[in-house]
Image 1 (cartoon, rainbow, N blue to C red):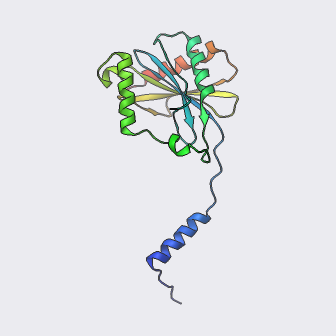
Image 2 (image 1 turned 30 degrees about the vertical axis):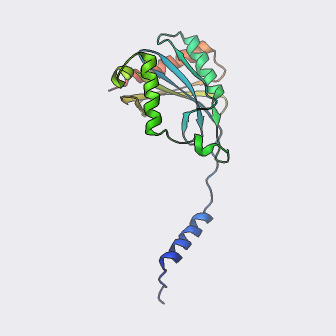
Length: 193
């Protein structure tokens, strides 16, 4: 018995029907996300909107600049406020496509210019020399995960398995949270190439 050859349109329709019939993956659990960028000039704490990725919240975000030598209590309080302001945006949210996306090259360049002006420097190298990046998240409603990222190049960071992840209870004091965040920031800075 020979198998019938499908035309291009028949094949495409068959593939489309198979794709539409596949089960959708389960929704992601709600979470909160924030970040801290530590440069020699300031500590920048910001909240995120998140679903599959986490990105800066242009509408309702929390953003605070602290002194680079801010005490743990201030760092902890700002980190907690950023996490509280974070928004989980599921796919059925009306602004999902506008918010849950990677930033454009133009948006990134504008952001970098604002940070250079704030730091009083002219180059990305001067802005990010000796910098570190920390991601904070709450997924289970009980623990705050603090992940340090390695600085790769001017403004680019990546997470690595060899950098420790710190988990603290959500109920810790601002001083304890700030101490954990600053410890992770020191590890992030030390991991830079």
